[in-house]
Length: 181
Image (cartoon, rainbow, N blue to C red):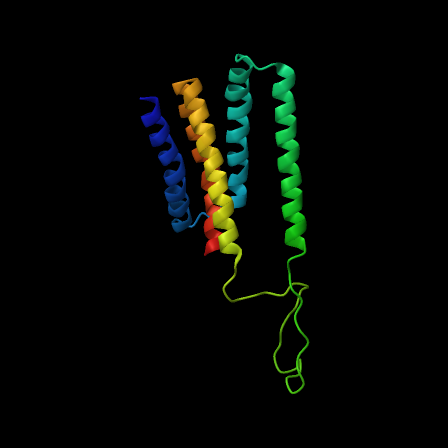
């Protein structure tokens, strides 16, 4: 029975979040400057995961055989690791823009009016889609582990974890859809 609940909750959180993100994008919640976009839903995603972690998962962990020192050390390592991962991604993003090549002789810069604001824009196919899909696959695997672990501890905790993962994944998938589009 627990295995069936884990499979159903994981499918609902994983596939349901993609469908809900696509529906919200279709309704216009992610495309226009005057609408609610994925960046506005980020607080919902972060809040849902933090509330679940600190109000449900950590108290459950304290009731286990693990000591408080080990639990907080694991929490600290996780927070620092993802902080550094985020900083590395921001550093990489800031250094990936290519610079335009100088115009060859015969095609002077005066032929076309281009406004360069310090970034070269590439309008052809990009390889970033594979990075998004690979990273999202690893991310979803971790979500599945979280949901399964929560269900093994308690069915109600598993449902709470699945709902919080669903709420967290909707803005995440909206961002993925914007990048992949």
